[in-house]
Amino acid sequence: MIAWRLERYEELGSTSDFCIERAKAGEPEGLAVFADQQSAGRGSRGRPWRSPPGNVALSVLLRPQISTSQSSMFPLLAGIAVTDAINAALPSGPTPMLKWPNDVLLNSEKCAGLLIDATLAHNLIEWLVIGIGINVTYAPQLPGRATTCLAAQGAEITAIAVSEAILDQLSTWLGIFNDFGPTRIIPAWLSRAHSLGTLLEVKSPEKNAAGTFAGLTPTGELLLKVENRIETYRTGEILIGVRT
Image (cartoon, rainbow, N blue to C red; front, side, top):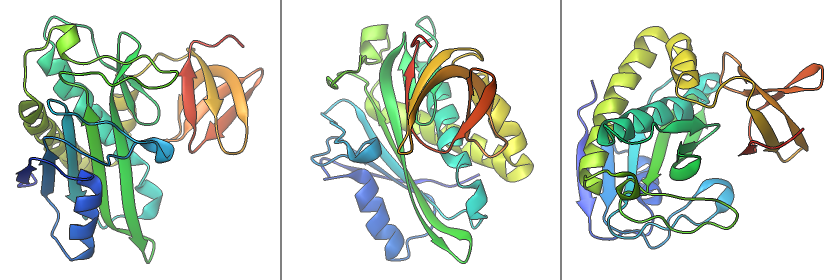
C-alpha cells in the first residue's frame, strides 16, 4: 500500500505541472497534490481543463520502475479507481461509465477526465504523474461535449473527500496491478466501460474511423471492428453512438 502524502493548496497553475517539477527534483513516489482551484489546468490533447473551486484537481506521483510497454495500463487503472470512488459517492444515482481512453461519464455526460505524464529511461518508467479532474459541484461547458457534475446527480460530498476516496482506490488497484499485472486490470476496466458492440467513432492522428467496440488488447489499446476487420488504436478521441 502506498502511504500517500496529500498536500492541499488554495490555488496552483496545474497540479500535474507541480508534481512534475517535484518529480524532476527527486521527490519519492506517493506525493498527492490537491488544489482548491487551478488557473492553468491541462486536459487531453493540449486542451485547457477548467477547475473552479468545489471540483477535484488532484495529481499523484508514482515511480513504478516497470517496462514502458506497460505504461498504457495506468490510464485504465486510474479510470477504474476514479469510477469506483464516484460510484461510492452516488449510492442511488447513475452508474459511472468509462470511455476509452481517459473519460468517466454519467448518463452519457462527461464528469471526469484523466491525464498521464511520464518520463522514460532505459526502457523503464522513471516517474509517472496521474492528473485527475472531476466535476463535483460545477460542470464547466466544453465545446461539443455534454458535461455534468456529481452534485447534479444527487451526490452530497466535497472535492477533498472524493480525492481521499480516489487515493484509497488507487492504492487498492496499484496493489492488484503489482500482484497480477494487466490480467486483472483489463477485465476490470471492461466491466465498467461501454459494452462490446457499442457504436464508436475514433478520431486519431492517423485517420478517422467508425465501427463497433471490440474490446481492448492485452496492453490496453482500443479494438474497433470496422466492417469485417479489427483495427487497433493506441490513442484517439472517441465519440459514442455514431452510425456506421
